[in-house]
Length: 600
Image (cartoon, rainbow, N blue to C red; front, side):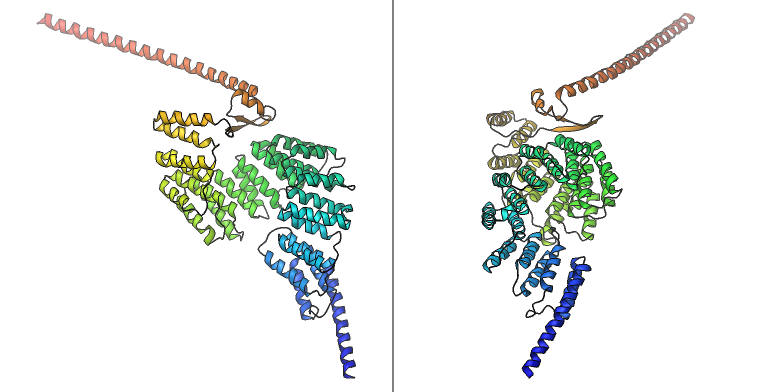
């Protein structure tokens, strides 16, 4: 009787727990809107005894699935806590199904923990739980984070063996994974062999070609599409902007607007990047006006705000960049970095440090790019002491590891300030070997302050690291010219001329605003400028402008010549008058002297 009573008691208790679990599931589906709500619901389930390890309830899989559905693929300070929560819920499930495995694999993939996600996939296979069509997309995304072509091919074989390549979602993720793993040819084979393609399939293939810098092939796929969405246009526009084909990016953006396709944020940010590279402020303002018409006066999206701040800052309108930054409702690390770099290139060190302090006060942790912008700003404005303090606090206070680019900024800063010895000591005590940028900063400082011995040392190190670099030879030629060491100057120039296979240095250029937009002048010869004739201001157009400037200059010179002649004529007349007056005075004095003599 006691055993029967105990059995009935357990049955009743399990029935109550089951009813409470279904009640919590209903709340979960109807009222939970965030991760915080999931945690609150879990606390209620624990207090009601619904999450005991020996009680298998339908709440656990639903709780895990709902939790992963609220996650976003962005790194946050609570990533480790989210991963621990998802794993803890999964461990409470005695017999996890493919539904549970998919949820926990998805959570680790979204939170950039691909190794654990693939480990769960291996455990799933060892447990005899068969993967379904939802499993492979999540595992393939984790594999894409790894960037391993061999792992991608292994998953490809499994998907082929289990018959999941008929699923267009699996095929699209496989193409995406191959593209990110450096296997564009494998991605093409999967794409060409797929019998089911949709717009996403073409978009993924275009994006793969773009990331492999094969923009021509990406355009061929784009032209074959019968139906294009905003992401199709955005992928190709981003590719053009990334590869420096900025005119093509702007032209394609205009074509998209004519086609009545509403541009996505990726398209807008990419065309803003193209405008900033060209220095085309007017086109950037036109894109900004389009964003205002769509989103209103205030920019609520941090992604768009970052693109606008970057564009206005690089086009010289730092005031507008600051206005957009101030009105941005959501600022992330990228928005702050864009503003800091804008202030750095404009040489406003005080305002730069003020924004850096505001960034720290807002709770946004700095990263390596943040400190790079701050150090560049300090270098341009001569804030040596501030830069030295921040550079020392990078690892100890902020936990940001120093990289070569940070040491390069400090070498440039010390070189500009004339602290050549301190720059050498820093370079020699670095935990890694200096690169061209680091030694180049020292070389520039030696040139400015006339330290020939250390300049030769820096030039030798640059030649060892990058023998084909012609910048060091050019700087050393200037150093020798300043010291009037003509033999060494000739020797350096001969060495540079003898290296015919040296990489061509990027030409200097300048941008002007004309009625047709921005025009870029290159410091090249006439025959070299022909390369840029299709996309930039041609040589003939530049020559016409120079002729116009020369004519205006000739007119000004003519006016100056006339004024000079009139002035000289007036001066000559005054000289003649003075001479005449002098003669008269002398004549009068002589006459008076003669009269005095006669009277005596």
